Image (cartoon, rainbow, N blue to C red; front, side):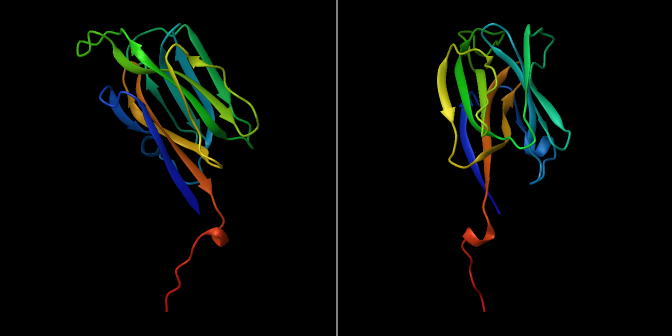
Length: 172
């Protein structure tokens, strides 16, 4: 039995196009994150890509022809899962005619595993820092909004529980 926990939305849900990796990558209950890659400039996260065990992935952000001078990937070991995320958000002056005074974005991410490893900082820590984790939950996938940048992210978490610890309803 799987328990699902939706995290908070970080960033600006009004920007970019909505995405959902569960739908877009055709995830099943058995798929898990195997690699996270990202590209960024000195102060802004340009894109993030999650590769799942079903060999599917979708790049989120950088839907324009822009160079990301910094790139990295975080490869999980087969017995490893993400159990905490640090998110940085802030306003950036980007090419956006709807927000001439700046656009609120996700500017940085760092991932932590249940095996005491962490990714490098993808993007910038120049912003408001928020940490998200849920006791005994594992990161399942992401959803949010993106176009040229990562406008908003929500992390979807799961926890496996045994049938014996789930409540049952007896019927006659």
